[in-house]
Image 1 (cartoon, helix red, strand yellow):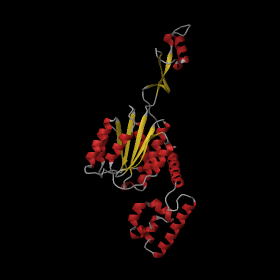
Image 2 (cartoon, rainbow, N blue to C red):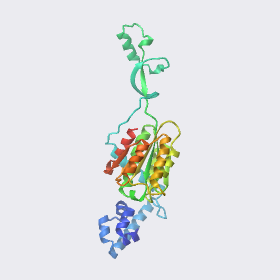
Image 3 (cartoon, helix red, strand yellow):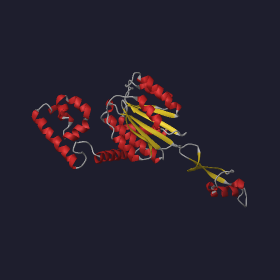
Image 4 (spheres, rainbow, N blue to C red):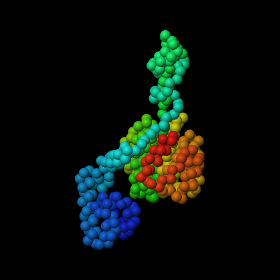
Length: 327
């Protein structure tokens, strides 16, 4: 890092990001850029960085080779989780239900009893009131009313996050938080959430699960690098979704057009058609996307999803939740 800072500060800042530089060096990035050319400052800076690293090793956040330990990863995961849940606590989080009947769903409205309905769903008070209105001295079969129960449709969502080089810094941080918001809400609704981290290839995955910590630990470990291959990502998602006839939805989070392969756009659209044939809907959340907007719109047209063009990254979690509520 010191070599990178001295050789080309701006390039180093693009690689590591302002947050890491500030935390590891103890200096404001503006001061770093201004003073890195002075030998005395470099000497002092290196000492500060060594002390910080030693402190993290003493706390078992880094190992002897200066790699992040499980303890360090867990701490980072919990910090990100608490930050996002704190922000979401003041935001309105609605929910949608289907009109499909369910024996174990929520009581919704009353209807007349018919053969085959469960006795335990009989609305006794409503039935008695109906009998009284009719002037009946006894409760008859025709007086019976039952609670019609409705259930939330079973959903499986896969959150596919672009981890290519252009997603470094604040972009990837806020995308992680949006993924946490989605997983938290979906699992709370008894749905399952999967994860794909992709660049030129699939870098990490979590098959659809109700295990919240497994999801966010894998999400927290993502590092932005390499190019973008959306076709490979979609093919992987088709493999990961269950075969049942349930709601299957893929959310693609990206800031660019696909750049990997001989015909990346054609390959992407062919993969979308396969997903659509498998009953998977696809939405695209474009993070400050420009050149890729036309392709993104084609993707959601074939995938029967929605396209969201995000300019204000601070609202990314709300946009991802809006897409979830639309299912």
